[in-house]
Length: 170
Image (tube, rainbow, N blue to C red; front, top):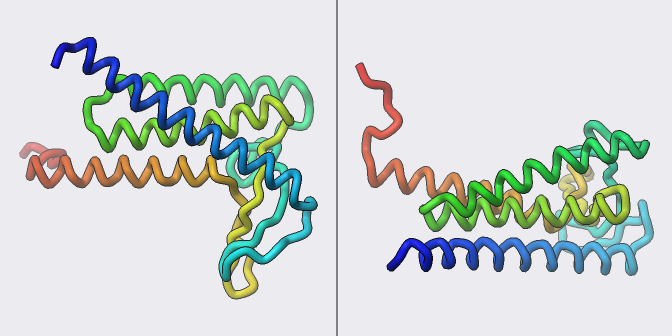
């Protein structure tokens, strides 16, 4: 296989994963905004309710952007990090690593575009157990988490195929 077809294959894989995960995320957010009322939970499955909310910050609403300059800063940071993850996904040769990074980039792109359009990220999946509400998230967050799991699996696989790798040299 030539290096250009290898590059083309990597680019196609990354592009498909990013576009599909972003489109599914944005579609689900649009449906949630159309069908749900903010702050009114609807039962979904035993440990997840559908509950519309809008996150103006990053994870768990940290560093909320309430004015145009802080929103621009948050978008610049989020866009830059997303581009770096895409570049990393294109550069890597490991299949699981590439898929994991592409899933992370797709989730990040979904949240970036949502924030760019609405000024906030739409969350609608409310995780709870035993009367305790843990957090509300969206499909982009799920893609990011799945990407991290793939990266961990790639790391474990590499460690098994190269015993002693990563251990300190005496």
